[in-house]
View 1 (tube, rainbow, N blue to C red):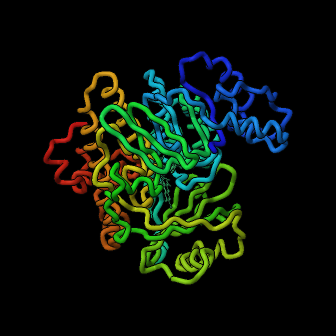
View 2: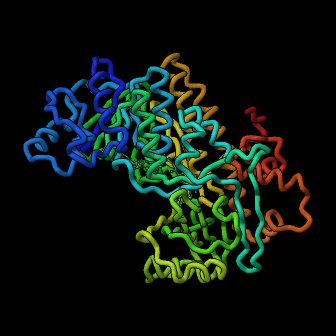
View 3: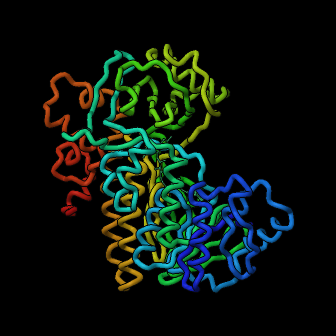
Length: 480
Ligand SMILES: Cc1cc2nc3c(=O)[nH]c(=O)nc-3n(C[C@H](O)[C@H](O)[C@H](O)COP(=O)(O)OP(=O)(O)OC[C@H]3O[C@@H](n4cnc5c(N)ncnc54)[C@H](O)[C@@H]3O)c2cc1C
């Protein structure tokens, strides 16, 4: 059973009713906490709106719940959408916004329910104009999130820090560190406002597509069909399969971090006064540790370990503490601080797919490939891929012209190739010393590294990027 739906871009006159629902529930991020906050109006069973907020009410009476369950079964309305999007995370919602604004009828299917926890809190400056285009203003960012002025690396062996500052002349925060529960829920809200139908608690288990038709099958035994399918299901296993059900991913996790174990910590003494304004990446033997201060005063801390740094048969907490002990400056400050949450892990996460698009489908965000998170490239690549893929889908559906899919593919190949090579050098510690901590590094090289760390990855004039770019892409004379 699908447990929630909200918003909608369909054309049969339901917008008025959906507007009423949004008035009731938008402020609660689609989860009404008090029964008195909404009016339960029985809805005709052929009208699939109204469910998201009602289902979340703890005090729902059983007959109402039964009715909601009936409503949750998506009625047979032909299920013909212009675009089906699997995964309502950053990439899926961003694509939904652009497609709906272009007049497409979009259905987003999401396994979970927002707000939900997600890792990946450190954003890059080059993402800010794209977020503004999606409708997230600088004022909104300033009100909700922790300003981020740069990335700082610390060599735990020498206690040496190197700061790559992003700030421009006017001191406007160049970027932010965000609670992803809040940030992702905001993107969902934007997608719904733009006109997407968003269905929560709906897990897609398989899909098929051809040039003008795609179908998805859900764990709730529903079938949805549309003219085109976007797979934005993050690092879910769904991505490892092509339309034929066979894995098409190239696993590159053995070269990078193998396991991330992380938690959230209350305020603790800073090593440097301005620590909260930076992401700090501590280099340790066999891995690295991120510290990402958040707006509520807590800090997201995670250890990323190479295979050689992972000990079998111990708990997540023990794994984390072992890593922390390899970084005395953090260990001394944190050893008596109790974490705020449970320890979570992510493992074996770096991969690149053989293909990003095919007849009737395209993969975006992490579904189209994921790289070790050392340079916080995930959200940036996710929203860029969403933007480029949406343009390609619009061109295809409106003009039967598929040419932009290859443009999208080349852009993503370039960016992932540059970051993959950069990460490769990061894990090769001698090169890190030369690139990040060298005493006699020319100023223009530091500026070039800073630009890349800020996410300006499509600049072929940047000497570091020129060095790292995949040679195949260079030979095609990339023009951005
Ligand atoms: C340890 C770690 C640290 C990271 N740190 C950073 C960082 O600091 N900065 C940064 O920018 N990035 C970071 N990332 C990466 C970042 O989290 C991702 O790149 C980003 O969230 C990608 O967005 P997405 O929309 O592609 O995927 P997601 O945000 O994961 O969204 C995918 C959505 O699809 C849904 N879904 C999955 N399967 C199905 C299904 N079968 N049916 C329906 N729905 C489904 C999921 O529930 C999810 O909501 C980090 C990643 C890891 C693993």
